[in-house]
Image (tube, protein in one colour):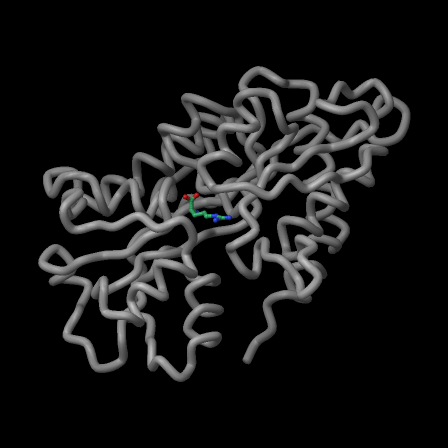
Amino acid sequence: MKKFTKIMALALAVCLCMGLLAGCTGGKDTVEPTAPASNGGDDAAALKTVETGKLHMSTNAAFPPYEMLDDSGSPIGIDVEVAAAIAKKLGLELVVDDMGFDAALLAVQNGQSDIAMAGITVSEDRLAKMDFTDSYATGVQVVIVKEDSDVTMDNLGEKMIGTQLGTTGYIYASDTPENGGYGEDHVIGYETGAVAVQALINGQVDAVIIDNLPAQEYVKANAAAGLTILEGAWVEENYAIGLRKGNTELLNAVNGALNELKADGTFQNIVDKYITAD
Ligand code: ARG
């Protein structure tokens, strides 16, 4: 299966990236923390960031529950709070720069932000352009359809698919059928996932491919439209924090802080705050 190959390739890429090849047994692509302990207090002052004393995070705050805007327009979400906790550990103040998803990835590559955090999937292509921390979440891409639709996982290739521009959903779905995609003619990229879902509701596309947690939020938020998520995963991925290539000092510091937050339960507390079992 093409998709399976893709997942394996990604798993391999992640393993290589983390220098974990020996420990990676394939299949499930979970990356265990390997980072050195955080360099915390003293060294932190020496950390070079885009703006002294600040940690700039580029994101696209249209991806609940990872990042979204609250009623007053302030960015909130799992990524925002985890980044704030990382910044605090490093003695820095978090600044969230909200922009388009593609722009958020470019900002960190161009040295305009220190970290990119936006539910970003680690992929081979992205590994060629930026560095990533250890993974902090598994992302499962799913397919949203209308409740009464005849769309299935197997006939997606005959349908019109909506995605968010620049995301792996867009990149994979618009790839050629030989590579497991459906071809550009079958895929429309929208500025945000919410706009893609609106296009589904309006009948402009037959399905939306997007990460599972935002998918659930969108289905809930549009209850009157009668949307549902197809059974099964379209593709499974890993999320990590992106940094400019070769920025080893900051990468190690951020990775160390991230792993401390995982170890002391702070990370899980933040996740639990946003993901309630209901
Ligand atoms: N995980 C997907 C990707 O990396 C989608 C991420 C979209 N994130 C966002 N904040 N809009 O391509």
